[in-house]
Image (cartoon, rainbow, N blue to C red; front, side):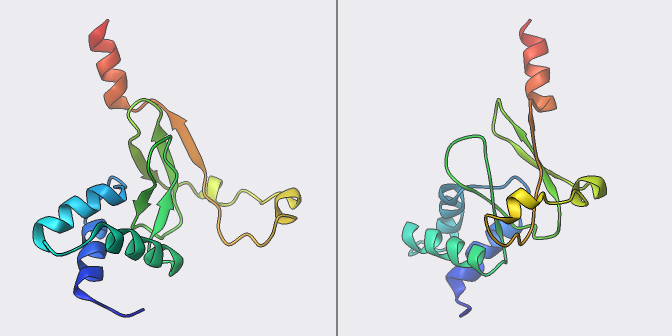
Length: 130
């Protein structure tokens, strides 16, 4: 993969984040530093980085694709109220065997568990609203 200033800015923006931003937020942030960058460049670069295994798409509850710079084995907690995505590590979940029925679909390269619920921030808001 050719290293360009724009690609470095996009990757750097994502690497500095911990909240799994979407392409539009990455575009808006990078554009503050690189006024000439296009939305298309951001989307294509994110796809290239994902294809190259340098980042991963994080499956959100709804809305646009979100991106994760953490390529180490981990899992996600997804808030069904606000869409926040948090990383967590669990050796037991990482060691879950892949069922043979899944393997008939093709080669499994990695697996990730997604836990969905309501985050503590949203629970606090619910409690204060009562």
